[in-house]
Length: 430
Image (cartoon, rainbow, N blue to C red):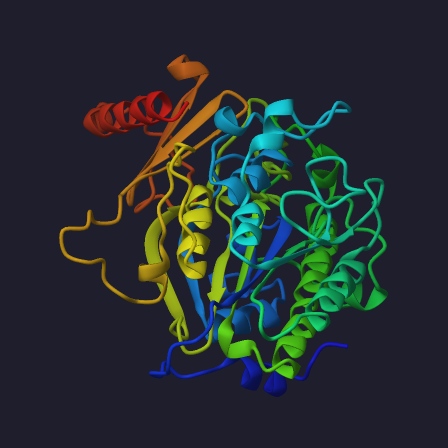
């Protein structure tokens, strides 16, 4: 049962206080399937109800501009958990019947690094990398859903996570990965109460538009976008209700102040915007619209992460592993050619030391032969190595990416600079 709003907020909110040195913190990483940042109330959505995730932000901080480095069903979480790009770890999209490539077995996930340093590592939910019947990558507690699971599994996932937490001993830090197989199409099998939440909702502020000619994956959902949005929103709210049970257990264990809770998603979702439904594969050719690429990144750590924080640094999914390494005091592997950097200092509102390079002004992504380079104002999308069709957007004046400026001569310098940055990134990390 979800906790009352007041009880949940009381368990989350905490002032920034000075406190004595603590043991290495526990880490709970919650990963959703398809959830764009724009779909949460804390990121500006006015119609999809996510009160518990919004409370995580009110009592913690969010990264406003968090981009996934790729959008494949298995490739994206692989990058999130290894800090390496698809061309490095070998998973480019969803897995086929053969499973992950052989070289993926030697990849180091954050769970491997934490387990080697003494963390108790637990997994609950959907394992997207094959062989889900047995523990892998440093996890010695394993509650994976069956690979064929297609129905409502949010509560089963949370149940496995709760059992792991309740079994922990105070003398040993733990890492818990909660990988929810939701929200995702077809949004069926939810308890009726979630559908009832959106009975009659018109989603007038969501900004959906009729299906476009180049719509591809899940095109049928665009035949009735409002009804599809009602089902999708119900799935999002069902996921939102899985947050309080985890916080409640941490409170009962009296470890809340020494536990960082992180929420993100492995890929975004257009859900009717741009006349498309899915993520990158929602169109032909593949798209890298903000709704598909940008996911929530919420950090909640009482007494360490400021409350109601909103960090505007450009962060990529490849930055999570070095950030968690810094949280746990674990060395980042030196032989892995990681392109990410820890954002722990910004997310805890602390400055970088003097003589340390400032935070970069670029993030990159690639998927299905499409590449993206984005700075604080502009975003470049190249297809087929630049052969096109290509895109360039001024995100300050056109945040929804409606006007393609790629052929506009007024933007030639911006286009050239971002292209050069993208080529350098492509060549440096192979």
